[in-house]
Length: 204
Image (cartoon, rainbow, N blue to C red; front, side):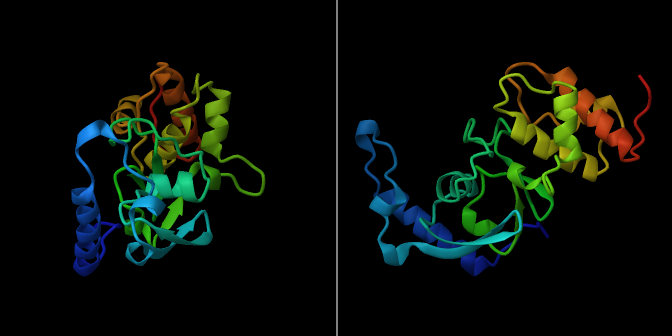
């Protein structure tokens, strides 16, 4: 079962709430979607608790709120970036129960009861995570916008045991786009952490 599995009843309730408000939204004029506080009555908003980086946050949200928007707009954890907002670029990658997830593609409610880790939660006791340090050592970024998502994917990649060769690293990092083209340095950074962790990465 998926780590984000949740009850059918919860799914149907969220789908009904979200679908109802989307259906009621005016189609013409190209107006942007209103803020949840302006569009959804208080009694239709969801009360939930998100566990992020080891801290529990009680929230009251529009049922349509994505995990990405909950992190950025409600918890002010802006390290997770909003890129395409369509699940294509990987900039919003976070971990949910240790599995990498595109935060723009899941509702915040789907992460309730799960352990969410963002880029802000990787460092421990003022010390960078080895992957963060490796990205610095190997210049694995230019503009830096994609870097949080790249690092979150890279950490999961090594933890999953899928960094055994340069080709495998490229394959399993293909969902993260770097428009600056820093890919060789990103591979070098991931490779160095994989080797240090005991993964079997053959010499070039």
